[in-house]
Structure formats: C-alpha cells, structure tokens
Length: 189
Image 1 (cartoon, rainbow, N blue to C red):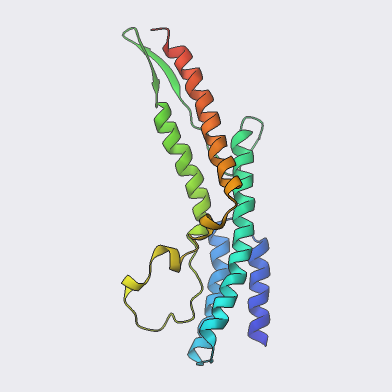
Image 2 (image 1 turned 30 degrees about the vertical axis):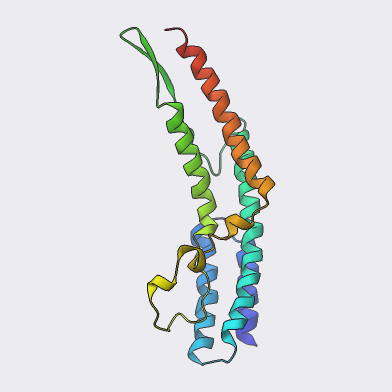
C-alpha cells in the first residue's frame, strides 16, 4: 500500500512538474524503481497492473503534450510580442547583395527545416520518455522492442488531429509570409 501511494504521488508530480525531459524522467524513473521492486518480489499479475499504470501515465503525458503543443504554437505565432520566449530561439535571415545579386541566407527551406525540427524536438520532450516496464529484468531480444513500445512516441498519434493541424498550419502560414517577404526583396534583381 505504501508503494502504491508513492506511485500515486509520483504521478501527481508528473502531472505538475516542470516541462523538461529531465524533470519528467525523474518521476518516471521513480515509478520504474517501485515497479522493479514489485517485479523482484515476483508479484502476480504485475504485467496487467503495469499496463493499467501505463494507461494512467499516458493520460497524464497526453494532457501535458497537448498543453505543450498549444503553448509552442502560441509562442511561435506571437514570438515578436513575447519578452522571454520559453521554447523558441529566433531564426535570423539576411537579405544580401553581392556582385549585384540579391540573395537570402539562409534560405526559406532551411528555415522550414529548422522550425519543423524545433517543433518535433519540443514534442520529443514527452514522446521520447521511456515507458515503465514490468519485466525489465527478463532477458529478451532487443528486436522485440521498437521505439513506439519502449517510449511514448505513440502519444503523437493520440493528439487531436485539429491540434496538429493548427500547429503545422501556423508553421506553414508564418513561413509562407516570410517567403512572400523574401520574394518581394528578391524580385528586385
């Protein structure tokens, strides 16, 4: 009973801790240690109990991921108005004239790659967390595991389609505006 209440406390901390992979991982690691104790004591039905626990963890992490994506999109859309961006670093592009040729460095496609990478890295804070396992000490082939089953990457598929659509829509909208602006300058050659 004491360990169960410790797990419940860790889940509460998981729901409210700082949104960094390190902070989230601390609480999952603490839960895993408690599950390992159950495993070493050979509790019966541990696998089904851990599956239920994993569902609880998924619900917490899905809510956190949803909030993080919403915050990221808000910050991306309003980066000029936010004094200390939490998730963003500016991407600076220069219009250059050299030998009577106007160019932009880095190009818009580089910016697109950069911002998509930033968005995916932000999602990976949660999606790359390790799942709690009931059988960490059992020998098995690493081929049996894949990234979707040993991490929470499957949470990305459980996000509301509208949320992802709005995130990618915001990226495409702002990058499209940047491209129009760049093309206006580049047409003067």
